[in-house]
Length: 80
Length: 246
Image 1 (cartoon, rainbow over the protein chains, first blue to last red):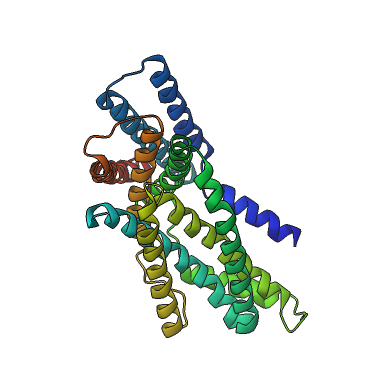
Image 2: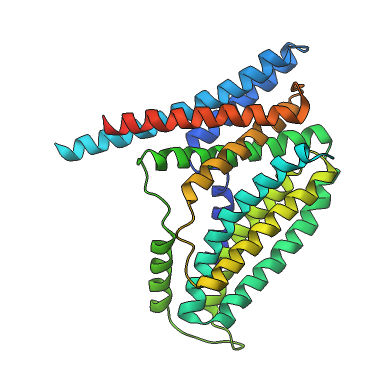
């Protein structure tokens, strides 16, 4: 029963965090933007919205590129 | 509320819930086929009761939160959830990680269930009941979260979100009852790609609202964010394919 309960709790955490670096990057970028809003109130939506969107996309694509490159590296290593 | 406001919520809830129900159905089908339907359905019913209690307890608690804090919390959770799906879908479409195979999961789960010791208490098989319970509770928690989160935009949006999830449940139930096999032909990665795009768009939108970004065009900004994420996702898949093949 405890094993099942542990699996359920871990499963719920895994709903949101699969790759720690991606989750940390997204949360970190949100914190940076939150601090920027406090430091410079009245920042236009173009700057803030654009920074949020392009920042999140860059974090996602960077993470994907790193994972794909690492997988390619493993394949090259196995081929040697 | 107009269709333009309700449609993205309904579509996101339907697609995301459909994928979750397919995954739950695979396990319940394996349990029912190998260990009997009485325990499989009992575990499923018990999980649905726990889920209903969770939603009834957490729903009013969420409503008590200040609106801006709730937008930020819901936005961040949606962002983490959606980006996780989008990342996996991109890596799967690039061949970096294996595709989700419902047939293989069904076979593996059925083999494990055959090996497990048989013991019956109150006419139920504990292994079978707990396996079905665990699967439905986990996937159901995702569905409940999706419904609550995508309807965070306004009180009128809970109905289209719940309708989307209910339609997905009925569709999966009907197909599973008709074919009695895992739903392996569902283009799961394409669906997960689409859901990742939609949920991430909702996540960025609500996180922005929580940080006081006044999105131009209101809810219409969701469509622009989704289009941007779709483009980025497709470009990311091409780049990942090239990097993995280097």
